[in-house]
Length: 91
Image (tube, rainbow, N blue to C red; front, top):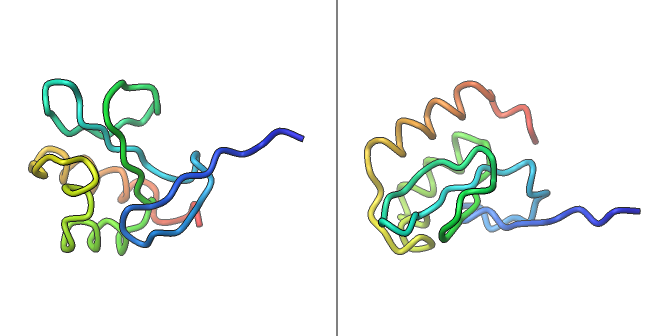
């Protein structure tokens, strides 16, 4: 049986299967990006595909602390779009 990679959501601190989470990356240039492929190089943090977790991560600045970089409007828009497409069905 193949082992399923697990990662922790920075907002709710729950361990979940890596494929059920979104990865946000701080690139070498210091840019924060949504990594839909899971392959971008840089420091990564994981977030549930859930509006409540995204709002908590923004409010508590959990993503900013995990990635050691300030949140930008482009990333916030990308997260809103991704969560809007998903509708929280990956629970």
